Length: 445
Image (cartoon, rainbow, N blue to C red):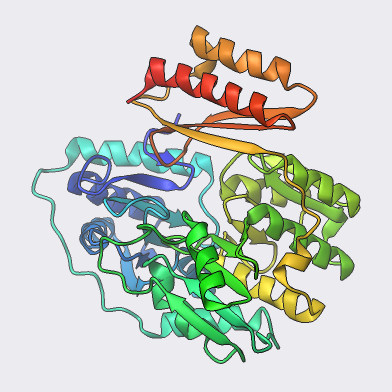
């Protein structure tokens, strides 16, 4: 069982284990050793005030392990995945905690193919990290991060635009929310020159305002901006821009489920949806499954986490997959969730169809759904705690034919997530409160 890696790399509070200096240095050494002889590693980061220091410590560890390090500076996570593959790096590393608060940070690793590492590979790196910690000294060196390769962002932007050749905003007014994160360094350049009026917000990072009351974690903010500014679409990214949420022209939030629906229909109409199949996750709404079925499209569910969606896509040959939270994966176009690419592809569908976002998603009727997050002090097996198991069993029995119950731990935070869908909103809320209450009583932080 992995102890350091979650569903999206190593994550925690900056300066505290596992992001203390000794462990970060050990991560660098261990990764370099894992990569073999004379590896080359490209490093990128988001806008947190701790990112530069973690990058310096990690650079020292990588060099101690024999790696050559190059820096793309502040840049999105999918951009690092792209550059890793495009330039033949042995690995790509991103210093980011994605949608988490500014005090958190993380280390995400991509293999030379631009894909996130398999669980078995992460486990092997973990074992090497713990070996390094046994021999590591308290005096951990820092090394300056290499000078930023300024052409990296421009190359990534060119690749994104090439994926939607001929895209035009058709004069639309578009509102962007960059979450004061990595998209701030890329999105304004990307959207310039697309024959529309682009208004950029939350693109002034100060190290502590990343995701703060903005971005994909707060899509209601860009939805409000759309109404206030008379825009036709709102686009909002998370801190490292690997996911995206939208707002339609009426100021209604459009999440990843709706994006999967419109993208699947477009691909199917063009004969590009392999086997008429889409991969979603356990968190996707039953309404998405019903809407896809009406269009002759099957939906498979993977565990939460875009790497697990991708694994199932590879296994089935699916062209499209994603998460309700806005990680969308297009086979052949990206190796990981890419919020900027997804935004361009959604705009491209609108351009070719001559329809608004609301029109393209109008028939998605979602079941009532509630998600309750409970902060926990430890992640024990829930089925082994009688009061929690009983609450879950009660919900599953009553909602067996008319809803779904999904209880899981977050892979990136100390949270238990209680998700319930049901036709009966009262029963849904009652069972969600009961299960969350039991978890809070037994495991609450």
